[in-house]
Length: 573
View 1 (tube, rainbow, N blue to C red):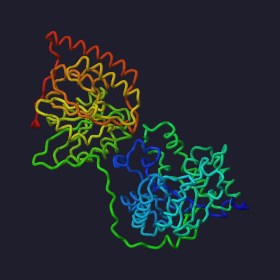
View 2 (view 1 turned 135 degrees about the vertical axis):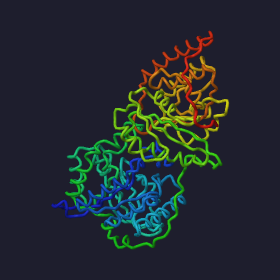
View 3 (view 1 turned 90 degrees about the horizontal axis):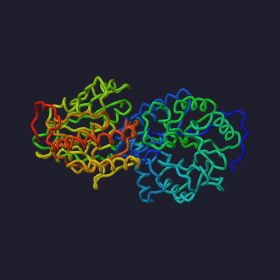
View 4 (view 1 turned 30 degrees about the horizontal axis):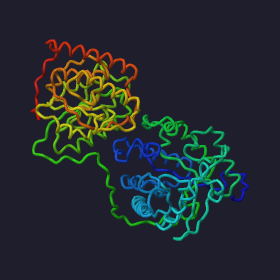
């Protein structure tokens, strides 16, 4: 154990403050839900949150070490440079948030070297410190430190002796220098405190989840007992109480991410005004090394995964209208905008894609947000319904307003990948009236969807198969490609989600040909589902009885009621 320190003035000795430069959708807790290939869809709040953090530190006269991912340094070099220019240290966190212990030594060597070079180019200064994208706590992984030293770093702050992993190893609790094969390396473990025999980190969530008196006491205990600096941290997204909510995450992860975000600013200010913090390089007297400038070179770009290969351009692009029903979607419209703009770009070679966004009489700020988010984008139109008719009615309003014979629809939450629209349009042959996405097709799939919902949907599909001619695996998907002249023959009477199944059932009874497109359904990421489970189940049973009655009427020679078909202003495919 480090020698006790007699401190009468808590501000007399400096401690180490580190800041994780990451956005709200980068965090480990959401890895299962959000693949890095989908990051482009989310509203980027990193710059505004970093500015907020910088202002907080400036107000408190505090300097810190900001650990940046290589992909952030490549995509936002100006932000990294601005942090450095304001007197803060820049360290590397590797290229992406991942567990370095799961990398091979060669993979780790490459990541350490590449991220160091990329971050140095953005900061314009030498990088001397490293923290892994995911901190580790296994003493058996100390071999990582020698690779860090080999890559030219002078200190590492990746180890966090939390839970029980470092029990019996008090030498790993405090800042120390290790003699390694490739040189000496300072090790700055994240500081922890003991409760009920377990050690927990004194940073980030610690500020928000524990009572303020507990935070004050543990900080006081550390600074009065140990000569080693207290190494703490926070994430820049933690000063953003208005960040979008990833409602699909499990409850424990949502509590960890969002609880008491509104208190974080005041908690940090109180801490920084009580104790003196500085950057890691300044505390270790390595500031001269960090201040060394690096030449401005063209850093290699990261290859960003794309959801779909761009279609090869053709002489004539097919006009297609995409209808997106929106009801109380204000919190997810930035995600929708980024996704749809990517779709337009990827499919621009063959499709002349126009988008109609239908506000279904939302009770929140959706209509205003639609206008501010999409109002200045070409080929985007906004329709406002005067009363709420449900998703099917909103889709029908968009189909009526479309000026193309080929019309598609998709949910506003993008739980289906709209980049697949190009492949679906290709299935709309001259004798096909509708192409519908089908996650329950043998070649389809689902991700993170609750089991009860899968059972319900498959049971409903089995029941519809007993009644209808088109034997589909999915009858309730909103991701569809319509022949407009066929769609406008259907009179939808049911409200809400029931109208989606009613539409396909009536189209079937009219003798239409319907084709399935196997796809993957993902759980809704932002916001909450509008579906009411019990009401939907009872409504679907009632609708099945209606469809059965309509089929009998058709068999008896009675035609289904149909709407007049408006004129089509665009050529058919």
